[in-house]
Length: 209
Image 1 (tube, rainbow, N blue to C red):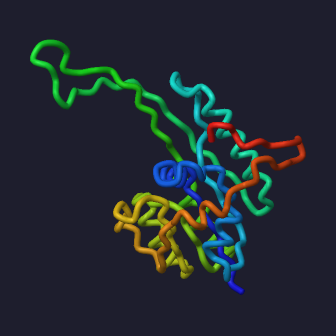
Image 2: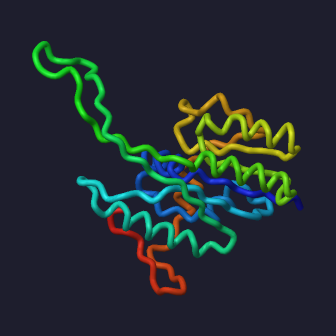
Image 3: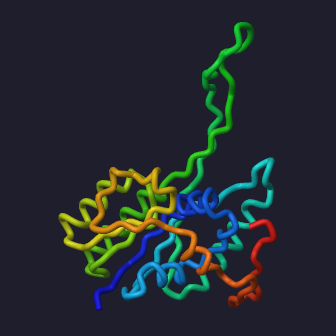
């Protein structure tokens, strides 16, 4: 049986689920892959993300994320890969400036950097090394267009895309060999238990997760 590696764009998946299935964020990626692809031999699951910082309106955000990543690490064939966040304070023009007063305001702009590049790099490296014959990308990020094309046309592997966002927002720039739309049924059925354990002890689902 051919081996399938799965490449997960963590924030793209998170925001897709948060917007569509907000009660299903405690997601077991191994269980989800098994439900989406029951006839595949899943090799690696690579999870790409960046560590968030506390925000004034949500000081517990880093703790929830760290708890979830700890739960993900109980999956034997999963590895985590990190980009970074950059916070800037640019001065931007108001869309509807008042007749009197400042026309620009200083905003807090946080950007996640590196996850799409990391995902593309590992997918191409795995394909080049013959680590898989099929790759599944869980993302709707149009920036992955070129690495998907290279993996298919130059390295000869099959590439599928799973869209975690609404169907009408699917990126048509991505040209995989096959496409799946992420739906509530498999996501809801693939939740971690409320409590699980690792070598450090119990892991509890965050109350507000």
